[in-house]
Amino acid sequence: MRLVALGVVLLCASLFAMPARAEPTEADRATARALALEGHTALKNKDYATAADRFGRADSLVHAPTLVVDWARSLQGLGRYVEAHEKYELVLREGVDSSSPKSWARALEDAKKEVQALKPRLGWVTVILVEPSTASVRIDGDLVPPAAVGVKRAADPGFPEVTVSAVGYEPFKQVVTVGPGEEKTLEVRLRKLPEVVTPSTAPLDPYRPRRSSGARRAFAYVALSVGGAGLAAGGITGALALRKRAQLEDRCLDNGDCPASQSKRISTYHVYGTLSGASLAVGVAGLGTGLVLLLTEPKSKDMARAGLRVRPLWGFGTIGAEGSFQ
Image (cartoon, rainbow, N blue to C red; front, side, top):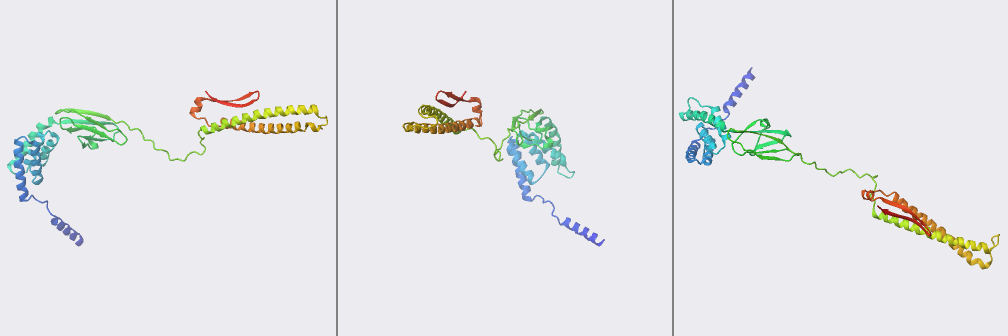
């Protein structure tokens, strides 16, 4: 019990030790009166911007319903009906104590009358989000809370600008014409921005076929040409060797013995036979290499459209292949 009592005593002591809200100083009151006098003069001369500035400054120094009502009148003169309406409502919410000055009571009565006259002059804008429903909405640059999206939002009569934005969508902007007491509804469907495709960082497929190259085709054609020339040379030298063999058969004995006078023909026969074999080997190798290169070459789109054709060439003293594009 002693501990509880001690705690209560300490709590009360701390509450009494807390500083109270600072009251306006005499200098603050004097400045507020001077600002209010300037505000009344500006309001009488319909200089609403100066009047709103002076009454707002004065109220921040010394809060009073008389200053707030005159501040609301200045805002109303500037066409800022929404702010003026809220100033009148502030006076009504705070009320006036019975011990307050008579000027405060008159200000309260003025606020009741003027707020009723101002309400029909407010404009209303409803922004309905079709897509996306989580977009950000602003009216004249002021952010509209999510709870106020899709319902009537008070707006000053005139040309409020509605902007809607969301990540991944094109921003929307439109100026709405709203008269006093008029209601406007705006449905907004934002357009999606095209998706940005980032380059893939995946490793290249080692089994992806290589693109066809001009060097490969050129080498294939050279191999075909060499192969064709080799086969042609082999055929010619083979024919010459056969001719020499026929001549030797006429001049040599049946057992294969040849006289010494035919030694030159025998040597020529062997040379032609060797050349024919070597040429035919080169021809077959070249022709085979060229055909393999062409037939196994990966076809690109251009080659597929062109239609590569390879065909062999046969003729007297000629053997090989040729290619063409159609």
